Length: 288
Image 1 (cartoon, rainbow, N blue to C red):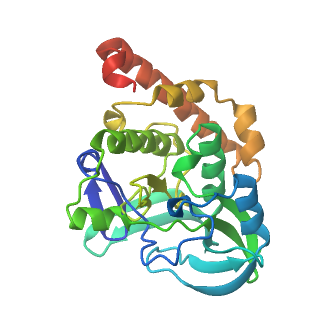
Image 2: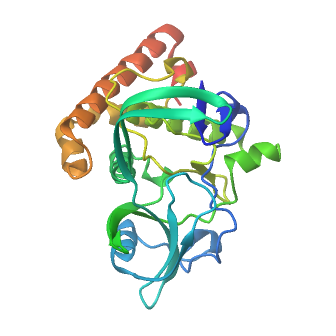
């Protein structure tokens, strides 16, 4: 399997040997007042949501990477100051030609690149207990545009930088388990853009997934099922319990009926895939 976006192309299996992909939010600002890495109390998710929606924008500039032109904003509510990433892309094309510039060209029908998918992805991650692997995303209007805004994660590096530096994670087993979770989640959402600049590595070597603006394709089939080798047993249980009604309630403003139905079909295929693996290989080789 190969994940691509821009000029970065890396075989998926490499991610299990080395660390992850990352949206380069490097050159991070001073740590947030409530950054747990600094030994200070964290904000609750509800507090972060409110801050992202309501705090005043006191500074704005472009980001270093990202073809959808996200903006990096500095927000302040008078007590807390922290950066956020604002993405307003909402592009719909009947036919989209992708690639070029030395890369293989492909054509995608019913192409969508939308900020709405970032918010839907976060809500679904929350339902699956994977929200610790994503920054909080909410919808906000800024500068005459409506888009997604997310809590800026001060990253140690992104995956492209890690690979260039040939750095190994301090705990390979935990690293690989995070990669397995990301694979399952990306397959569920049929995210066509899980590339080296869309996975952050924190200072604690935790994986943070960002930018799902090209997820939620309408094809119900699983992408690269051969790469789905292991799964967190709690994640598998939550996948089985996930209901259409629960997901619809959480994502009703951000996913169409067709997008939701396609995702639930992929959910069924994922559960069946891993149950077949367990039956063939045994729990010890599949579940962790």
